[in-house]
Length: 73
Image (tube, rainbow, N blue to C red; front, side, top):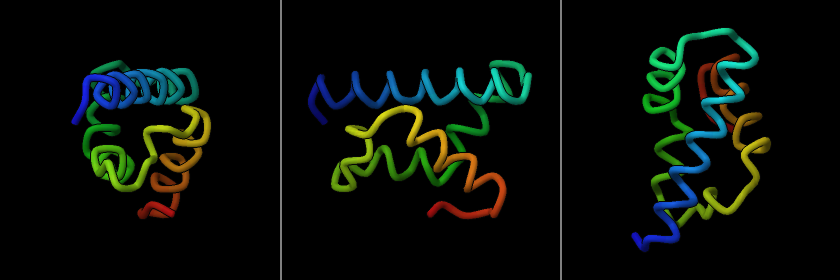
């Protein structure tokens, strides 16, 4: 993983976590726990998906779908 890829993934995690906190009023610890244990996180870490190049809003929609239906799209 390059420094650029790590930066993009870390930024994505920060933004998605912020969206989750804003929508659900969870604590930062609880929100980070959800994000780090999600299928979305696994897909972000799989560089072959290229998901880290997408917008944080798009990735948050994927997380919401995962939380609602129990699986990622």
